[in-house]
Amino acid sequence: MTHSQRIKQMFNSISPTYDTLNHLMSFGFDILWRNKAVQSLPSSAEEILDIGTGTGDLVISAARKNQKLKGFGLDFAAQMVKQAKLKTQKKHLTERISYITGDGLNLPFPDKSFDAVTIAFCLRNIDDKKAALVEMARVLRNGGKVIVLEMTFPENIGFRKFFNIYLDNLIPLIGRSISRDAKAYRYLPVSIKGFVKPDELTILFNEAGLERVKYTKLSFGIAYIHEGYVHY
Ligand SMILES: C[S@@+](CC[C@H](N)C(=O)[O-])C[C@H]1O[C@@H](n2cnc3c(N)ncnc32)[C@H](O)[C@@H]1O
Image 1: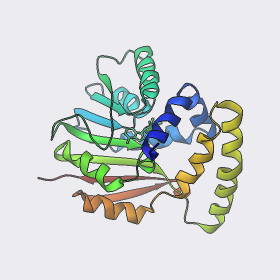
Image 2 (image 1 turned 45 degrees about the vertical axis):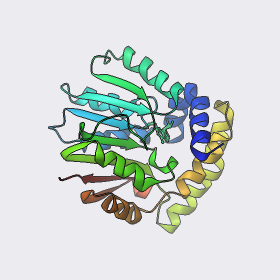
Image 3 (image 1 turned 120 degrees about the horizontal axis):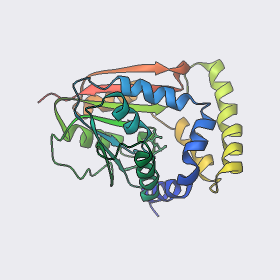
Image 4 (image 1 turned 180 degrees about the horizontal axis):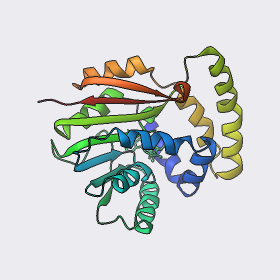
C-alpha cells in the first residue's frame, strides 16, 4: 500500500470521530486558526476550492462569512466527504457548497477555475508538496490566492519541550480512548514534527510560481498560515 493509500484509509476510518477529536486535542484552537485562514480570503472571492476539506469546516466557515461565496470541498477520503455533506445539509448550505471526492495532486477542474484555494491541516500528508502547490496554482484565476494552514513543530526550545510531551503522550492517549484507530493518532505527531519549516514552505511556494508569499505565525508557532498569489 502506498503512503497516500494509507492516509486515505486512515481518514476514512477516523471520520466518525474526527471533529470531536480535532476540537478536543487542539483545545478548540483549530477553530480559531481556520477562522484566521478564512479572514485571509480576498473579500472579492466568489468561488473557492478547499483541498483536503475533511468534514468541511473551512469551506463552511467561509460560506457563512461571505453570503455570496460558492465553495467546493475536495477530499480523497469518501467517508470524510460524507461527514462534510451531512454537516453542510444541517447548516442549510447545500446550494452554495458542493463536495467532490478527488486527489489534491490531480484536481478534477480546468485551469483558472477559482479565486482562491485553501488547504488546512492537509499539506503535511502529501509527500510531493511542490506538485500540490503547482496544481493549486493551475486552478487559480489571475490574481488568485493560495492559503495554506498547517501545524508545525515550534522553533522555541522551551515551548518545543512542552509541545513534545503533548504530542507524544496526550495525543495518542486521547486518540486511543475515543477513536477506533489508535495508529492514526500515533501518525499525527510524526506528521507534525516532520512538516517543512515556514521558510522552506515559502521556497516551495516560490518554486510553484506563487508570488508575494508571506506567512503568519499562530499560537507561538504551533501553526502557520502561508499565502501566495498567481499572476499570469
Ligand atoms: C487532518 S484532515 C484536515 C481536514 C480539514 N481540512 C480540517 O480543517 O479539519 C486532512 C484531510 O486531507 C485529506 N487528504 C490528504 N491527502 C489528500 C490528497 N492527496 N488529496 C485529497 N485529500 C487529501 C484527508 O483525507 C483528510 O480528510
